[in-house]
Image 1 (cartoon, one colour):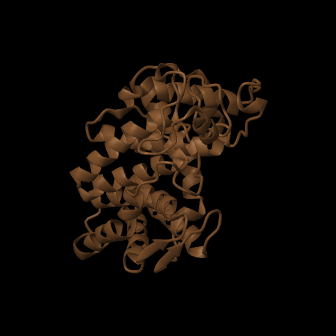
Image 2: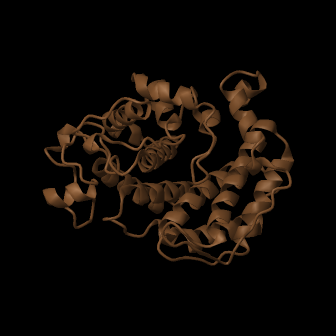
Length: 347
C-alpha cells in the first residue's frame, strides 16, 4: 500500500488523497466520548454518531500513520482511543449490539495497527483500552440475536474477531469462527442447501412460511440470494463487507474461512453486483423491484477471491472499479480501495 501511494499509482494514490482530505484525517480532530451510548432503533443520542465517527477517525489516523510515517497521526489515534477508554461505561437501548459492532470493529483495527509499531502507546493506556473493549463492547457483540436480520450477527462477529486478535484471546477467536461458520450459510443461499434456505442458527424460524417472511417475502431461492436482498442492498452490502472482514482477519491468523465458503461468497457478490450495476430484476426476485443501495463493500472479498484464489468475478470487479476510490459508509467500512484493491499479500 505504501509503495503504491508513494509511486503515485492508481487507484491507491486517489484513495489515499480521499482519505487524507476527509474530516476523519484532520490533524485537529476532536473526539467526543460519552459515558453512556444510548442508541434506539433508527435513532439515538448524539453519542451514537460520535462514537462511530471517533472510531473511524482513530482507524483513519492509524492508516495515515502507516502510510505517511508521520508520528502525529499515531498520536492522534491514541488520543481518540484513550479519550473513550477513560470515559465510556455502557451501551444501552435497542441497537446497542449493532452500535458496538460498528464502532468496535473500527476500534480493533485502529488498535492493532498502532499497537504493532508505535511504542509511545503502551503500558497503562493499552490496558485501559483493552479493558474498555472487554467491559463496554464484548458483552454486546457476543450476545445472542438468532432471529434478528443476519447483518447484525455478521457485524457483531466482525468486531468480536478483531477484538480477539488485539486482545490475544483464543477462546473469543474460536467462538467468532464458529459464529461465522453458522451464520454465513444461513444468510447467503446456494442450491446445495436444498429447496429452502438454512434457518438462522439457534433461532426459532424454520418453516417455509416463517423463512419467507424472514427473507422479506421472497419464496424463490437462487444462488447468491441474501436474507435481506428484498429489504435493500444496503444491508446486504453490510453483510458482504462483514463476512469478508471476518474471513480476512481469520486468514491472517492462519484460518482459511474464505475457502470454506468461496462458492457461496462468490455467488452472493456476483448476484448483487449485477443488479447494483443496473440489471433489471425479474418478477421472481423481490416482485421485480430491488433497492440498489450497496455501499463500498466488495473490495476485501474481491481481493481475496480474485487476487489470491484466481476466481473470475466480472460483475464484482466492474462494480468495485465503478466505486473507486471507495470511501467510508460512516459505520464500519472505510478506505478499502486503499487497503485491499489488487493487494494479494500472503498470510
